[in-house]
Length: 87
Image 1 (cartoon, rainbow, N blue to C red):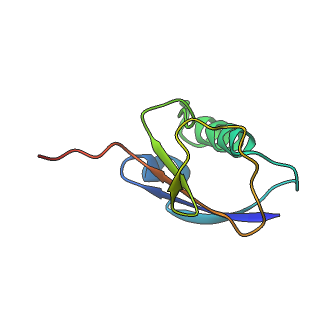
Image 2: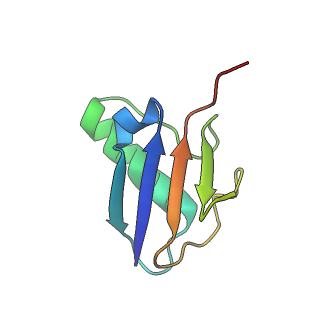
């Protein structure tokens, strides 16, 4: 299955802005996060925690909080956002 992953803010520099990723059919958000974390470790030489961090994760526009076992479906859009700062 293919999912679209988009990153915003500083995390974009670590995992990339937008990409299509091929995953096994039974993959969960936790599986996707583990793969992105490993790729980030290889690419920039440091780990980037995805699930369970202060990043916001949206699947098809819905905030999933820390539901890392949520199953993904072909064509899902996963957005990873750094914490917002403002006032």
